[in-house]
Image 1: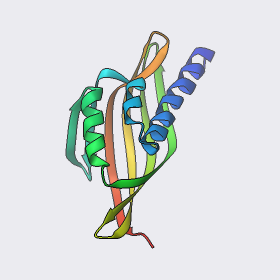
Image 2: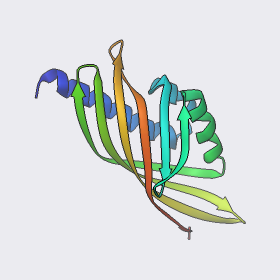
Image 3: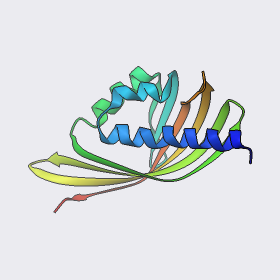
Length: 145
């Protein structure tokens, strides 16, 4: 594997992990630093289409509404398999997201097991997500004690 590919994989991994940190810190406007402006994000919940979004403004709008009742977020990324080809790359990544929300004066935690099927593009020397398919394959919601 060439040094150029290793450097690209490290830079893409940073984009992948930074997305999780921005999500935890409610820095959704900073998604614009990670996605191309007209990025497409498709989200499936248990195999059913939940959202098909075009553009970072729409992504931020929907994600803001989706997390309005979430008081704490914690994303933990796992493996990320990347295939780099020049200024383009594809990746399969895994994440566990824990969301704490309040309902009826009780707190609940929802654990999501997520697979991301991503397409990346390098523009002006930086890597960005151009297309993301998020598969929320498992959701476990329970009362937080």
